[in-house]
Length: 485
Image 1 (tube, rainbow, N blue to C red):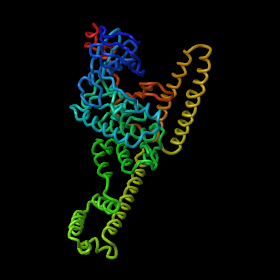
Image 2: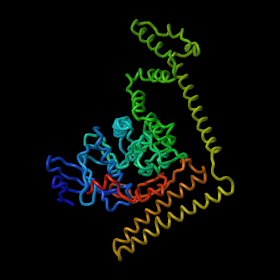
Image 3: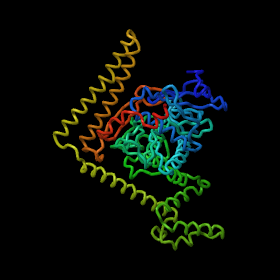
Image 4: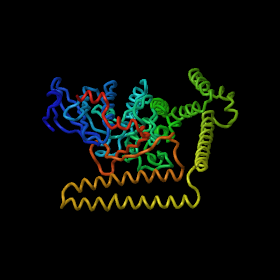
């Protein structure tokens, strides 16, 4: 494609940036301005359905309306030779996926910068009317610029929250999709989950589906170990909460709280006391400010602060200890109480989940789970190992067609595995209440440079169209036909 001219010679292709399931992205030059641009080509003739065409048109329409430093600038979009072309700003830098593949896990500063840029982008997108939901934030769709800032690309899966078009089809990358996306739902908190999963991948260099889990939730503490501060771990836990009603709705308040809890202390002699005072403030006690003011006034006058501290009710509780040590003792007691309360809540939640199960019970449950696990093993060994290896060996003698068949077999294995895991959830917890929608799953290679084992999952909750509308849905939209003519 290098040297090919598009749009009556305005754009000249100079190279390929990546290939994905929805199309190919080229690097090009706008000959009228000399600016480098990225051109995304989508083949209309090769589309599996007009739903795919709609995703491409939706990406162009959304980008044309957005203006943010962390988003690519929309330049142009047009149709030519049976293909749709989306022209946007060429963002220099590497994707997070490329960075982690080359250098391993990224630093805490990189993660904090990513979270800060993501908070700004999500506040901008979700603050629009109606809110715009990206739905596919993952390491392949985030680019780190040379100055260290991050940009967010690939708006093919974007959705206006209050104006869903033609059903509830969800396009996302498995592992970075929030649980509600598998039910055809997309909320602002859905993007918060994807940002948290991407940040966790940056810190661990491990895909989210391969990290330890507790039920539906990623076990962030087990995944990170002691590699990051507890404050940052708590931020990620609140972003990765499986229940969207309990998940943090925004990223910015979490970062503000993290900054307050991590702000630098004074000199070493005061750090211990100040940490106790801050912990006391978080406990909701009003005496902290009073004591701090008394100590400050006493130090200025040269008098001993104990004359005031003896009248403090807290000093009365611990007559043989200095007040700040007594505060530390009380802070430890409060921490133990909160820890015990959290433990009781976790036990209650686990107990409640066991009693809320609507699936099978007794011997039928054991038989069904055994059958599903046997099927998982058979599918994994047969479609995931034996058949692909055999087809790859035969492709040496019979050509690349069999090599493509091997990749299709791996794709079928991923789809079968997803359906079996969904069947296991059905057996354990019963059917989800989807209000009459019909759920379908489609697994396809994720966009960008291909890697073995990386697939893109599309789950649709769109009900079948009425009989009188079937013929209309098989044809392109009227506006699209007029545009093509």
